[in-house]
Length: 333
Ligand code: SAM
Ligand code: DTB
Ligand code: SF4
Image (cartoon, rainbow, N blue to C red; front, side, top):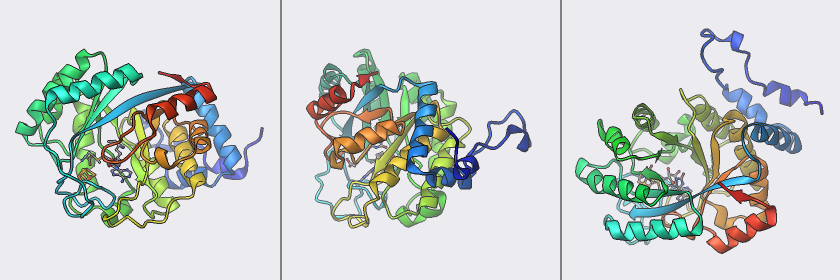
């Protein structure tokens, strides 16, 4: 098949155009935007080619999430049910005890999850907050699960402590394009998040970082987010793409939903620009049809959150996901 001229415009830059020939080629925002502008069928075909060159196209990785500390967060992220600044009707909870966390982890493993992700609504954990989480990481790992935590911004030395506890992944999203960031979050900067990702990477922990779409951002902003993730010194091993779950009481409660095909295009752009990363179809699956999810898998998504809760909102239950996997002939990783 021949590519269209739009597709040609989306080719990666030649390495010879770069000042340092040892560097990976960088994706320009315009090149990622050109991917978004490809005819839908061509974009999906290209995403499938990239996907099949690096992964089994019929296998999906599953992680189960647990909110270990819910609500009362100091930050003003405009999408978040857990910010103390908005009245979202959420009941705050203190850090869960270890035995409750382990009970959830055992159930996740029994259902077939390979990774267990623990999320806490902190701007940044204090050292005394981190100590019990280190114990959770050690104990969950002993169950034979991969471990992931998402705790907010890390202070010096904390990533190393998490690495010593055996943590496999740290989730910390860039969330949206640098130029749109200040319209969604004002209590920290995107640079703060980049600094935490750098500390996590240097400590030898795998990076899980992605973003949210459907917040009223432009297509260019979506392309800029994808380019930024792909151009990190090492791309994240895991890239969650969240579709905004509108939360009553937050500033984004009434955001115009994204066109479903535009969401699929975002997945495809992530797949093409980060060929060896797992692209995670994240928040928003509960509101998607099975057909929409199948399109996302066709566009290169190869991991999901599995289990009937995300952090504070619903996710499809395991039975629905198992039926979907059977109907599509998908295996779990
Ligand atoms: N406090 C930590 C942080 O901000 O990194 C960890 C928890 S935070 C809830 C994790 C991620 O969930 C956010 O970065 C955002 O991408 C996603 N998220 C939060 N609320 C969401 C919503 N209503 N819809 C979709 N994604 C959401
Ligand atoms: C990510 O990117 N998405 C997950 C996980 N990382 C921590 C969280 C989604 C949260 C959706 C809204 C909620 O349940 O509160
Ligand atoms: Fe929510 Fe995390 Fe922002 Fe806190 S820092 S408001 S938990 S997204």
